[in-house]
Length: 257
Image (cartoon, rainbow, N blue to C red; front, side, top):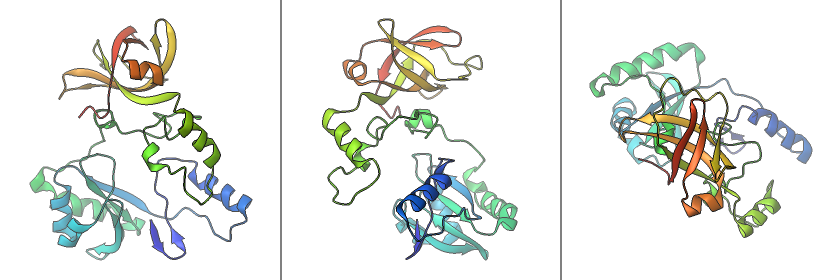
């Protein structure tokens, strides 16, 4: 988010981002200060998010485009309102700039949202096929393997980190693909994934599964995995080495829903 001509915020799940930005600034000799702002995000997500946020802030929020934002206030609580989030149903994030008023902000949103049966929750990123950085990726994953190739412009005139490597990957195609799995068995509380579960085809490991859940809407057990491109494109059956034993599975495109 570009808050002013010389002030930017990066909001993302990568815990190493602060150190990474400092390293880039130092190695490139940039005249910048890299710090972590005292800001706390509160997300309002789901099919009623637009209506609720419009009631809280005004109808101007309905015109806010994805990833656009505005510095504003709610009952004189200073915050930055951004149309973003992690639900794939649409929503907003409220970046609180006064940490002492967190409870007040939470209760204000909760009270206004009671008519929509609002409640605290966690995103179901498996059904929506949303990638969790560091959870559904491994250290050498690249954007093309993660289904984010459309955000990479290898023909951009400006230089950027990894440009040559990404151009090479774009030419030859990614070796792995981020994909869904439908498993034959049932995922329950006995299915904790302490580590990535190996995925096999013809008894050879071809990838790993990073998340699994029982989808009540689909009535099936589904998962997220990074699997060799040839296996994904051929749609051959695979086997997941689950904590409870081998589970048959089929590759499924993302999102599930």
